[in-house]
Image (tube, rainbow, N blue to C red):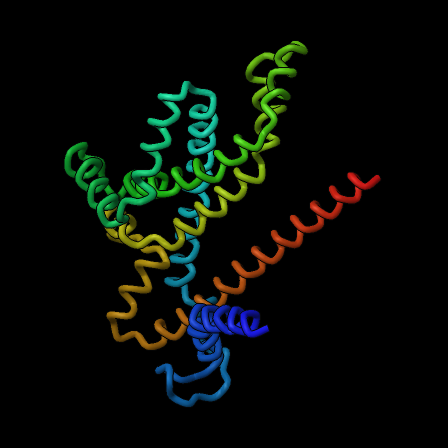
Length: 270
């Protein structure tokens, strides 16, 4: 009983440290105060500013366009890499797995600066083309897609693929009709993780973005250094909206997974 209470208390403390700052920010996003910690009256002016300021709307739209575009490219490349490595010889598989781990554990500031030197200084690619920025985000996200898809490949019954070949399907048909459908959960997880990583990234974006372009992360850092109080408090509202959207996606995804698992168990019982 005491161990159970201690475990629950420890879990509550961890959750409190994780979510209390976000909850405080959410509360203050509905006030008219400009400083967290001071008393303010209820107000939705921060949300009105957020959704009526062209500068903020342009920044948000650009951020999500970059996130979904780079996540799509990363998902394709990461999935192809995972499938290629899985069906390679052991030596090649280990080498590719090791190469994939380096970007994951490497500091983002190192990756960002390296890409800046390679693409902009050495190769002379102009930052205004958005090419360095997209390449940087793809380089950041692709390894995580690889890591999301690889476990699904290991769980897959490889005899199904071989049976498809024996029944007359060529390699392309077996790949798209047999292998890919079984990898969908890992592919979707990798895509969503890529979107989150792209939205959150600061260092790679800072080194590779055009001077006139900002994502949420770079805009927030620059805004907190300035004196535009109205913009700062509108960012509280933006943080709240992002948290609520992500929370809804997570809850919805878990609910769908739970229903599918329940349906699968019912079929198994029948």
